[in-house]
Structure formats: C-alpha cells, structure tokens
Image 1 (tube, rainbow, N blue to C red):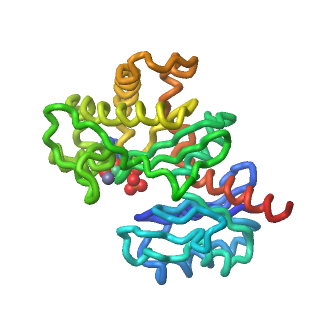
Image 2: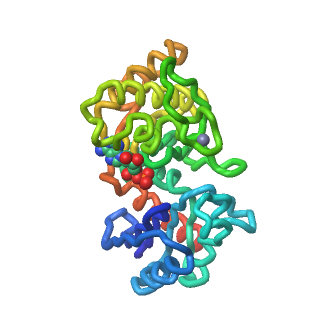
Length: 293
Ligand code: ADP
Ligand code: ZN
C-alpha cells in the first residue's frame, strides 16, 4: 500500500508517499500561497503517485469532527485566503481515496506515538514551540478533539516578575504563544532566537514560561510524557532548564514514576523532523483500514 501524507502548514505544504510501515519513499515541499494556487498542484502530486489513502495534518483552527458537515474545513484563521476552505473535501473529490484529517500538532503526536521513541505510550503531549505554540494531545491512545481541538498554545501564564516584554498574541495579554514563541523572543530581545544562543538570561526566562506550560499540561492532561519540538527547541540548553523548573513548580504535588525519570518525561522529538509526515501516514493508514472494515 502507498499512503500519502500532507503536512499542511502556514508557510509550506509537505507532501510525501510512504509505506504503511512508515518508510518514506518520496517527499516534496511547496510554498503555501492561496488555495486556488496551491491545491491543484498538490492534488495532482498525489494523483500521479497513485496513493491508496491520504492523511492530512492541517494548521488550525480547523474542524476535526468527522460527524460535522465542516469536517476538514479551515476555520477562523488569520490566513485569510484559507478561511472557510474545505481542505479535506478537495482531496476526497480529486483522489477518491480514504482521507484521514487532524491538526498538524495532533499528527506530530501520533507520529511520535506510532513510529518514534514514544511508541506504545498512549498518553502523550507533543508541543511545538516555533512561530506559534501548538499542542497535540493523545489520551488513552485517542487524539483529543473535544469541542474543537486543544489550543493549549494560548494558555494563560503568569508573567515572570521583572519581564516587561510584549505579549505578541493579538488576542491575549498574557498567553504562552504571546510570551514564548519565536516572534516573542525576537521582539523582547531584538534579535532572532538563533542569534541569542550565548545569552543565558534569554533561555532562563524562556524556560520559565515553558515550565509553566509543562506544569499546566501535567496537571490537566496527566500525560506519561511531554515532547517539546519546534524551532525554538533547537536551543537544547532549554531542556534541562525546563525539566528542573517544571519539577520546582509542581512542588512535589504529583508523584509518579514517570516524573522521577524527568529526562525522558520531558523529551525532544525522536523522528528528525519527520514526526508530522509520519503521523499523517498513520492517519492515512487508519482511514484506509476503517474504509475496508
Ligand atoms: P514553524 O513554527 O513556522 O513551523 P519552526 O518550528 O522552525 O517553524 O519555528 C520557527 C521559529 O523558531 C522562528 O521564530 C525562529 O526564530 C525560531 N528558531 C528557529 N531556529 C532557532 C534556533 N536555532 N534557536 C532559536 N530559535 C529558533
Ligand atoms: Zn494567545
């Protein structure tokens, strides 16, 4: 079987074809422009490769409820040409194969839980800290959707005393994405994240915000592991800082064997930036299995 994978991001669309076992046979990226420009070349790409199923991981907010008439539609995004666009339907119509659909962060979580070091962990949170912050959540082996899908990237955080930096989120005064995503680091310190590598105060503050996030994630979702990925986490000095601060914030309130091994509890991604694509592959595989059941 040939499973198609489409990681639909705000800046680029990553297309791939893989086996059900997660061996990537081919991949290609296209810039995300408008649906009119982007979609015909993407549908042809998959049609020419005769995929048996497709999995799509899309930027949000988007409807991930299979029972809704809006399933697979992009919702109130600031990327205006995509607002209200029926993304999944475009591929169903063009390819006539089973199409699985979820958020980009949920598929990254699924990729790690299926093909990565977290294989077999059924309660997992995957967070990307990049241009924005997003969290994919798996509970008991199921990707969490609920009313819409989690938007934990905008959780309310306490400002670290003395931090006068701006919260760059247009909707909130003190949210995680506004205080800790890449653009926030850039605004606060006047340089890009990678240029600040040798400024310990930058990462100390960043780690305080990410540790508040981990504290909230532990208490709300009770995951057995939290994976932190995205461009900002290329600053690997963040991991030990976040681990230590998370334990400090938790204050011994939660005791669990997982937390005793904090280095593997708060972990880096394990699939070399393929977690999203591989999660799409698993989503496509599941859509195919459901269609043939
Ligand atoms: P996106 O979130 O757009 O998919 P990334 O996960 O690569 O993409 O995140 C991009 C953000 O991460 C940018 O704000 C960039 O400044 C920041 N970033 C990328 N590389 C690094 C790095 N090595 N150190 C710190 N920040 C980085
Ligand atoms: Zn926000």
